[in-house]
Image (tube, rainbow, N blue to C red; front, side, top):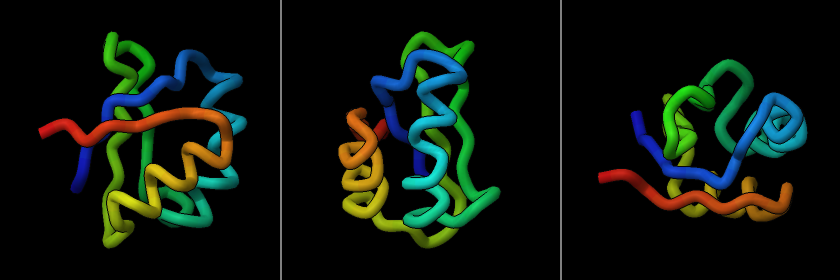
Length: 67
């Protein structure tokens, strides 16, 4: 499991990144905690940090690993 601080802000943002994250991390293998001020994205499975960051960048967002 990997966690990332993101620039995702709301449910509409989550909807926008969904197809990209489903492609890179797999459907059901990720979630965004919108209640956390850092908007933490949690990714389960084998998706690489680069794949996750690239997917978010394609959708117009950024992610930094929490560590």
